[in-house]
Amino acid sequence: TTTTRDWAAEVRRLAAERDAVILAHNYQRPEIQDVADHTGDSLALSRLAAEVDANTIVFCGVHFMAETAKILSPEKTVLLPDLNAGCSLADTITAEDVRAWRAEHPGAVVVAYVNTSAAVKAETDICCTSSNAADVIRSVPEDQEILFLPDQFLGAHVKRVTGRDNIHVWMGECHVHAGIDGHTLRERVAAEPDAELYVHPECGCATSALYLVGSGAVPEDRVKVLSTGGMLSAAEESSAGKVLVATETGMLHQLRGANPSTAFEPVNSRAECHYMKMITADKLLATLHKGTGEILVDEETAARARRAVERMVAIGT
Ligand code: 13P
Ligand code: SF4
Image (cartoon, rainbow, N blue to C red; front, top):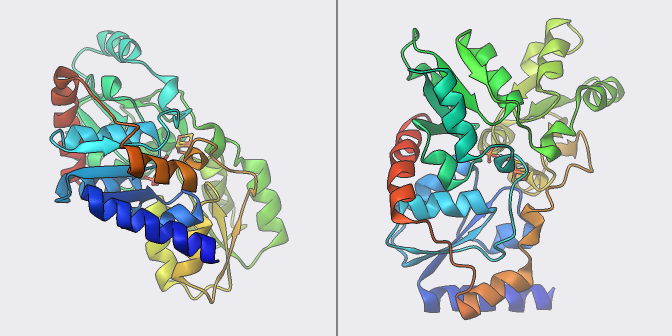
């Protein structure tokens, strides 16, 4: 519509005026994804945040993502259009929890999913995202114990794919992905027996998806456990008639744009992250106008967290 076009033109004009690059996560509202300079998964956006030349990064995502950008680019101004855009998974663990857990397992390597606060990252040896979690685990010597936090479903997934049994997993979960459970998945698969399945490893149903393969209910080549960026690459090459997608529903916008001849449908259409959706068209405009929503991470925390995040950025595709 004309209003959306006018809004997008105003966003682009203000971004140029501020020398700002706009980064958007795959779960953002469609109009935000479309107006951004880059849309991607957590790892791709972290890499971009470390590389871009602009003075300012406007991060359309949630708080821990903007913090990660600030940790990697401390000299840049990082703005988050709504500072209340949090993450229920990141909220399941504090820096104090990590210190206490480490004290119970002296000598263990702490691997933290990027969905954590800067203070938690500062207590961590190496971070990972869903696209490089297994590679990060493989980078740790096999005889070394690992404390993996905070997501229990991603933790179970990396244990399965790496075959390591010396990984202890924190029992956190994301309320959105935990809600995409095995029961819902089995119902959808039964109703759509020919469809392919893309499953994010944070989902409560990630184990059920592999069980469906193991029991012969779904052929192995039809089930893919992927990060949001991995889903997009798979979609670009897909010749499937239909794909059932188990992740936050914002992802469907990218998938449908990448491959109009395949039908992408959610496993659970109510799987919406209200934190991601807090970044609205109006708030993005207000941030670009006024420079509000600045992310600040104290220097000592940032320096300690940076080592863990830089190791993450260097590992995997
Ligand atoms: P990825 O984009 O890395 O797959 O992460 C998903 C997620 O839940 C981020 O909040
Ligand atoms: Fe956090 Fe879940 Fe929202 Fe991702 S989808 S930002 S993990 S609450």
